[in-house]
Length: 480
Image (cartoon, rainbow, N blue to C red; front, side):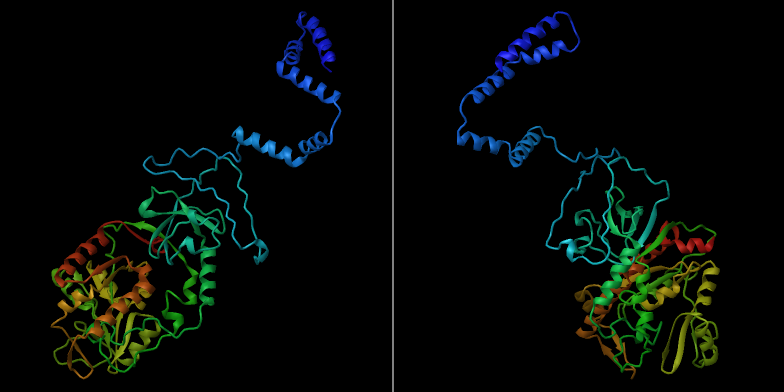
């Protein structure tokens, strides 16, 4: 073999001096020392008698597993890794740490145990076109924790959020998973959230998987706006509402809208003022705070005059303390959905009508009312555009100090001092309100001191009227 190679080199040398194309390259190749050594090794192996060991070694070296091992070694040595990830986008903020999440998740739940249709989505590498559509902003009406969601493609890429938070949807092309970021921190990278359809399905599945429990939702108080009676320890004669209409957080009908589209709203000077709604548990001082707030500027702040079916007293005037109407008229107003809130106390009906609220707003004043949390939905209209403020109780130590000389008026007109169980009831009621209605709260105010809380409330109300706020997009569409 070496002799044949020598003859080939000599003949190529003749052509090399004639400058024939390609001969120079082949001539240099055949004169390479490594090729000469390799050919000599081949001659030695061919001339020497083969032993059983050499035959076994040759068989091993020609095996596919050994060849694959050598190929893998060469790939790693050359750092020829796949896939080649695209470069990071140029619009990532410099002060933020860029992180690319690439992972292969393998758990003890193989696909053979999966039910229903399994969809694999393949995304080609390349520059994705940026949507030219206007960004969509939504208010989360439910909580979501990606670390507790087994269906999310990558939990680390998920975006956790709580009810009431404003989210900016940057990509909703996928029917199951959207990309979003929190509006309060738009510099952060977007994360995965369930689509409207997927989150609604998850809520429905969770709702049906829960064991049957007795009705535990907040019940509307009989006394309505008469907050001084709401801590009375009397027998239960309150109006029972069906769970279907009074469970915004847990019942089936509320799962229809896990996201609420919102827009930024700036009230114009010629527009009505926004309705101010105070919500809080009995005993936290909502009614007292409302009265104290109105005293700050009675010509600007006003509450609507309620309706009642009781008889007018000698010192009262129709339309000043109450609108005195017959029971038939009151029932007709109930059937026509004229009340934001109504209830029965001592055999007489009391209610706050929508028309009286509009009259205050049409007069150019700021209308402030206190509602049971169940009445929030009735007030959320494009005409009223309510700004809901949750009055939260302070710590139990603070309540003991501020209510040390306060008392409760019972059905028997007996003043009783606050007890420890009263404070516990206030805390539990406040926690339940936040759990069920926090997605509707625009602001939370702790009533630790009446004067201080009134000043804070004044600042909140001014911001609600003068500064841009997030409101449901349906309110703007209805106006136009």
